[in-house]
Image 1 (cartoon, rainbow, N blue to C red):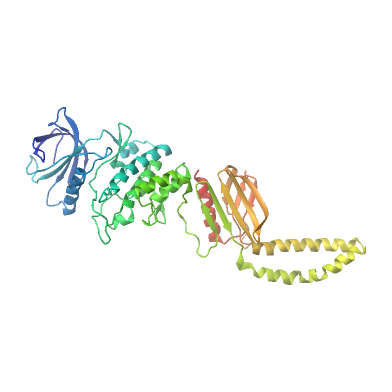
Image 2 (cartoon, rainbow, N blue to C red):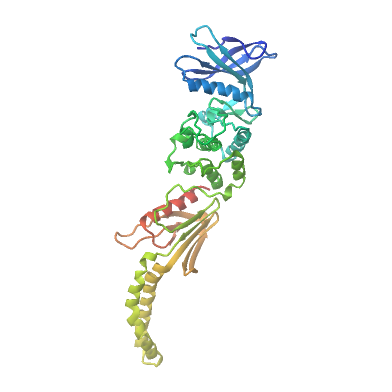
Length: 454
């Protein structure tokens, strides 16, 4: 197709003849080439980017439309972080080619793409990624608030340039869509797997589709792993366990990458506001709550509160208890009378173990059936509270950083249902009310996920 050093002579939309000397190939696929070139028609000579599309019979009509649309959209864009349109042309005949070319010229942004930085082993810290996020979203505020909105539809590390001025630039508008999104309208499916949300695969892009791509890009920058190579749960990208960043920032990225577009942040301006208030965001439920469970969880970046209700299905134990202790209660006044009339210590010694038995039965039946447990964690302290009829009758407290693990304690097979055990300082253990197996596993996962991200 084209070669380095080749000079492209065109008579473009501008009155004068323009000449572009190709210097370095920046990208290529079956029908396209992107070149760094020099505009010989300017004084002093300036570097530009020349994109060439071969108009061969194999080129799809949609691809031609996208190329033309990119030129038309760039003509109307004026933002300091977007390359400026310079020229477009059609070359009917060129040496070494049997087919005409369509060309697009735009200003060159000196710098390096974020994909090149990732490929070179560069890793980004939280503050850097936050700054990058703000700059990308500021560009999207401009694009999405145009009339009609302009959707980029292919945001990813290779299309983001870290300029020599240490600013972020958004390039390659080859997938751009400049039509208003109307009900029933469908568009050409474009984008890169891993960065594209489900609705865009269905050919129905909206401004929130670009936000998903931003979130997926930020995940790539934080983890160093392409989002397509990360695990998914409930269609959500799982990355929190691979980074050490603030949970509020994790939750915010989760809101950008919600698989359901209705639950996702919908505009770039809204995303910027949410970033400022990220510690008030709740994380998405990445593990499904067991069907029928009445456990309530409130989770934010700074704290998690869990309410485990009483085991209402075990109330039949009360009736068992009543039948068991009624004879003892019936005789209790007589024993007290014997003890107080001085008929000997034998009666008192008889009453004490009976009362102890009643206390044990009360704990294992009434409390097990009617009490509920509250678990509270913040970044400094945690607390477990046992309540009966809404009143706290026992509690334990400790420092959250000293939690060794949260797990299911192994006991003999066939024993009573177990709760969630919190091991504290490697010595003390606190256990919640008994739980069904699926609830116990789900709750342990939720707590550990929150503790893991700090």
